[in-house]
Structure formats: C-alpha cells, structure tokens
Amino acid sequence: MPETKMNNQFVRRVLIVGCNSLFDEGLRAILSNKQHLKVASLAYSDDAAFKQRFLSERPDTIILFEICPLNVNRVFELICGDSGTDRLRVIVVGANRGKIEIYHKYHFTTVGSSQLLALLRKKEKVP
Image (cartoon, rainbow, N blue to C red; front, top):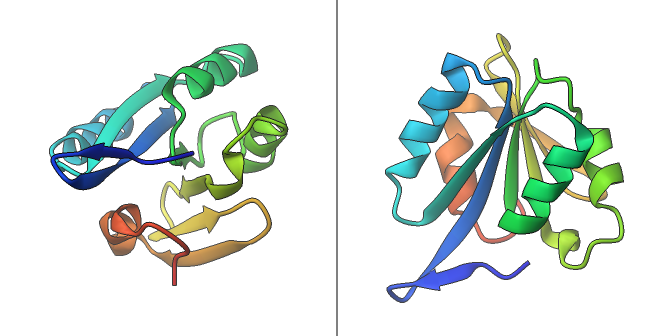
C-alpha cells in the first residue's frame, strides 16, 4: 500500500477501529492534527463493514483497541489476499496496560504506549 505524498511529505493513512468510545474519539482528535497522518475511524459493527472501510481507505496502519470485538487475527483473516497488505501494520492498544502491540503480517513487537506517535512516523519496521 503506497503512502500518499502531500506537500513533498509522505502521509501515512491510519484507520482507527474502536467501539465508539471517548478514547476512540480522543485518539482520533490527537492524530488528526498531525500533518503526516490521514486519519479515518470506524466504530466496529461487523466484519463486512470493516472490510468495506478497509478497502475504501487502504490504510498503512490500523489502530485496534483491545476492548473492540475485532481482534488482530481476524483483521489479517479478513484482508488476506488483498493486494498491498504485506506492509500493513496493526497496532493494538490495551485498555489499562500502558503498552501497545505492533503486528506485521508475520511478527509482532511490544513497546511502551508513549511511543505511539513515533511509530506512526516510521515508514518501515518498528524497533
């Protein structure tokens, strides 16, 4: 999935998938102010709605809340076979743990939650 180029800068497309919570909206508001991010959000209702939004947005990164009924394994099952998903990053934000998990197609990493913005700026693999 190629990143969008805007004003000679690459813009990362981010899809926030949550449960229509205050936390979802707060994160969307924070990330929407960043010039290098194009942010869309979805209150998860079912797999079909997620897949449709995924195909229309073509995100580079999906931020998924742990309390959401959709889990990271199901995300990869739903997008399996779609072109350009080999560079997709799924970031799972835990409700109370202070850590986030980053999943690529074949591996995952755990880092502190304070590193979220730094992760979204990176073009390739995370630390």
